[in-house]
Length: 303
Image (cartoon, rainbow, N blue to C red; front, side, top):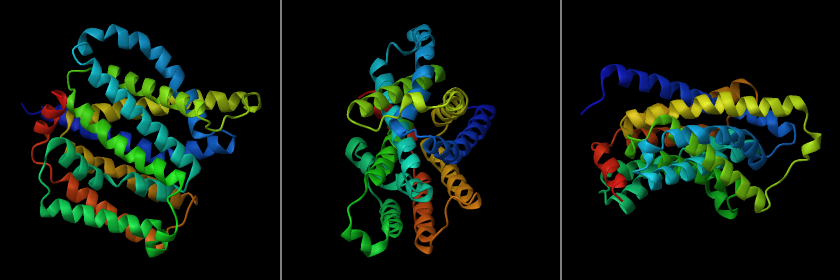
């Protein structure tokens, strides 16, 4: 059964709104970094309080997700780790570079479809992967990149993109789980991931040196900015076909790159422009080559 037109329009509008919020998220994150916060500590402070308050809601909706607790757990862990890695990469690295590495979705879609769903790889998909890989080479500096290993920030951006793609598939495969439960699960997963990173040695700020204004700003970022971004994100990817959602989410890349340049945060080198064009075209090719998204969701839900 296809979604009603009004539901589809709502999902499209909300996903555009979510992509815009995520695309602009570098701005408050850079401001928090200037105050001495790092990715893991900021994530724990912003995700943790929302997750704790959301536990009651998660418990109240338990009858709706009790038949799929494993899927909800995976959605929370995958979505939470995607967000923490993304936040950390943006706070530490160059906005444009991080966003382009994050958006290597065609590569992960093709590999994941082949490994987990036994999907065939046609010429269109091979072209998308080839364009994405060439774009990656341009972003990393061409042949000079072969002389240097990827930085920790580069790896965080890549991992966040992989996990983000996984979260979208899981959200699409669990339409029976309420939006609120999915959102709370991602906040819980983000808080747990951040706590684990701090336990493994991620930078810890001087808590006493943080001003009241900074702490209030972090709470506002968690409850308002992240809350709106996640609720609208989960709604959109649950109610739209995977390919259509992927096309809309490219808005995030456009917003992030253009806003960082317009606000004077960064300048676009020719190789970054080339990389952005190639990765963008690859993402569009992959996103519009998804003829049977429902079957993928059904396959995931039964595993």
